[in-house]
Amino acid sequence: ERGSKLGDWLGTQRKAGKKGAMGAAKERRLEEAGVTWDVLDAQWEENFALLVEYRDREGDCDLQRKHEERGVNLGDWLDRQRKAQKKGTLDDARRRRLEEAGVTWDPLDAQWERGFELLMAFRERQGNCDVPNKHEEEGVKLGKWRSNQRDAQKKGLLDDGRRRRLEEEG
Picture 1 (cartoon, one colour):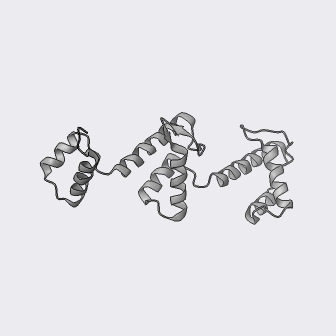
Picture 2: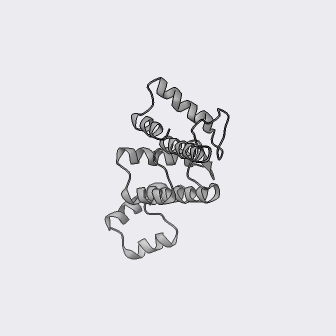
């Protein structure tokens, strides 16, 4: 900015503020000017707010990995949060906030559970689990889902816990 390295200067101010080496008056002036002390934290908060807006509009937090919201790759951001959760490096407060917002940590597991739930509703209504191949329930291709479970079982790829649950329910 006008020949000065403003970014470097601001970085120095942020470091001084974090160390407590800046006077209160300077700190207050920078805050009044709109300086963000922790850029990464502010970015996380902005992305979280975008996620909540998406959820309020769409009804869930199940966005595609490449989904963009106001120029931000929100799907990629959410994927990074899921990976951090899986590694155990996601801050507990952030994890709780994401869970309260409705984030599913394992979307594939949630998708399977949704298929199972719909299959149980079908069975309750029809008296069996013989879902026609082209049948859909609430936008889910339930017949295809059931067929995929059978195919996975035949190939030995169906998780034992899921297999048991399906067998127990007919």
